[in-house]
Length: 470
Image 1 (spheres, rainbow, N blue to C red):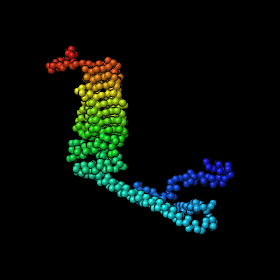
Image 2 (cartoon, one colour):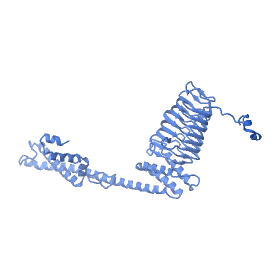
Image 3 (cartoon, rainbow, N blue to C red):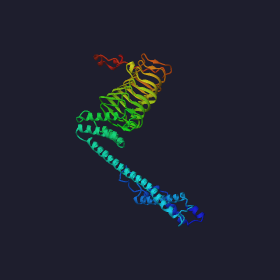
Image 4 (tube, rainbow, N blue to C red):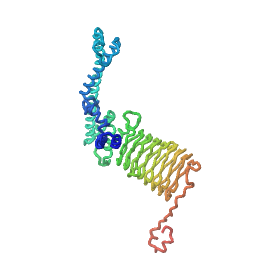
């Protein structure tokens, strides 16, 4: 690009222009890094990332003397003109300044330069203070790093008491050092992902795991706190939960993964949890879903206002999952798409006073397989939003809207398949056009098989055909 204009304007030969272009392309003309290397020291003063980068000593000394000399000369000329010496040039000639005034001018100049020397002393003191502060911060960083190494090593100890001490040491370090906070959260989640079975687990292991869950939850309850972990990506993939509590947690941003997690026993609490922007996944379609095979998982009084909670391809084979008194509004979403219900009890209410409230949002059972168990929407109060059973397959599970108040929104059964089971609308208040399509198809009746008496089982086949159920 530089060679063409050089040839046209009659500048140096083409080969020289090409060389100049390569030199510029290599960054030797406008490379700020090279300029900084010439001016500043290669390593920060004192070393470490906290130390300030200072100019080279020889260059700083030369510039200081040059600036002092120039300032002194300018002060001298200025004072000479003020004393009536006439129109002086940059270099006065002999006789331009009267001899009696020369001594006073020199003395005034020296006094003024002394003031500048005081300014240089202040600058030097500031430089020294910066270096000392950097050394102090570097020492603090080394102490925090040592604390992390010691605390992390405790998690691998064979004693549960020592591992508990490691958990508390790590969480205290996370509160003290913001730079290591995300790393510590990943370490604690990784510990929970380690293989674990309640039966046969080492003594105290359950307490260690519950302490980790409690420590994480405590740092999710206040998004405005300076030590908050709200917004972190938390990975609980394939974890085994036999209890624990995330009560009052705020999931505001990022991704929290429970993909493949197993809830096998105990009571896991997500009560009064706020889902306000994060993607909380118990299965998102790209990975295997969580397995609710025992125990209770409660989302009582949880709030779904933004973000989404997905349980795609999750398996509900035992226990109870409760969303009693939960509140759905704005863009909050809860998805059970393609989930497999085969024995669990999923409830959004129970008694009328703990029914969920929907003023927006969406609950989806699209494509779910409802083989057995119960989905209870008893006491649901819905004024807006959508509950979708689109393409769901009812193969034996029960669905109850007992005392539900469906004043608005939409309950969608489009393309749902009704093979067996029961849907109850007892004492429900349903506004017009809320349930679509309406009326719902009836479950097909299964012919009743009448058992034969033992003695008739020995009859010939053509006689047995006369008996119903034969």
